[in-house]
Image (cartoon, rainbow, N blue to C red; front, side, top):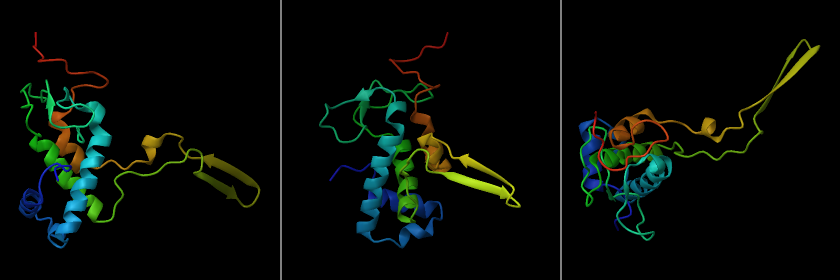
Length: 165
């Protein structure tokens, strides 16, 4: 089944090379589950930041492969391949998932209320953030692994090759 980015064998090598010994303790079924969940996470979190367009129609399950996609070094990413950066980000996220950390956090606005009182005379209530992005954990290793294949800048789009000038 090709619904995950990368392979179990490649993930084994990736984690072994980095001394991530926890990975070796998981069964093959657990690793495959981790790769699937991590692939879904990468697509959900980075979909709007990927350059180019999916090569398939809506039936293409994953966001990659893509055409007209350039990395941040201005190199064309082949339209029949998944960038190694995406696979590495999935390997990082899969380990996070299997180690028991939720990749995505559910969020309900306005439920984080805290109250502070001083000697019972003064009481102040603080409401938490109403921004769902504040509830999400940001994983530095995942972000670093995938950074080179994300669109440059914010809110922009890579339409074709960038010609510095």
